[in-house]
Amino acid sequence: MIEQLENVFPHFPTDLLERLVETADFAEVTPKTPLIKYGQYIKQVPLVLSGVVKVLRKEPDRDFLLYYIEPGQSCIMSYAAIRQNTPSLIEAIAEQPTELLLLNQDAINQLSSESPVFNQYFLELYYRTYGDLLSTIDLMIFGQMDKRLLNYLARKREVTGTNTLQLTHQGIAQDLGTAREVVSRMLKKLEKDGHINLQSGTITLVE
Picture 1: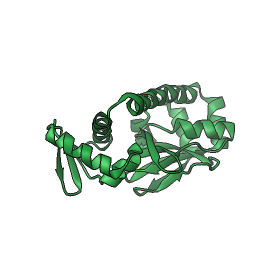
Picture 2: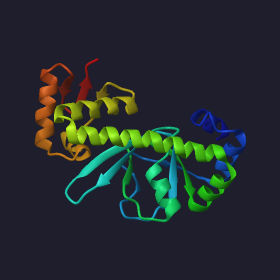
Picture 3: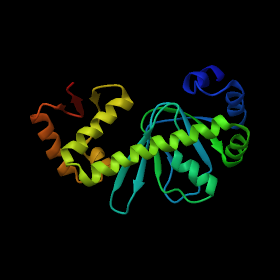
Picture 4: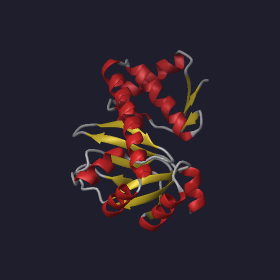
């Protein structure tokens, strides 16, 4: 386990890695497993070892994809909620088979008091996530839907490591907070413009 953590968190000193092993629970989850639900009090903060987790903002009639949590990252929104003992404002769902370390509130508090590196990790994560959220907001407010969709697909390629994405039009619409018909129309436009190739059940980005 220590060797795996060294690869995922290369900037963590050995004593911090050992404390993570001592205090965290290890979990393996399948795709579409909900990790955090909107409105619940956070019991454990996930640190992703492998796989990808997507973070959503839930609304009564739609969802919005906020950002992804990749290996070596955690969820700053759940970290803030557990430190302040407030209900979650987001939902987190595994996108792929995912390995996690789960830290409860006592472990978070202990590691925060013991390790400046641990605190710095979440501070840097805050700024990275803040930048992701600003980009999402800019696209939602100022971006045309075809640009939003192309950006969404490019980000999917980054987190999955493949140009060929297995996505449904309905799933994309849920992540972007729009209608399936709009997504289908925009995908056809992107294909016509030479950005993607569409086949049954897959979307391939053209480099």
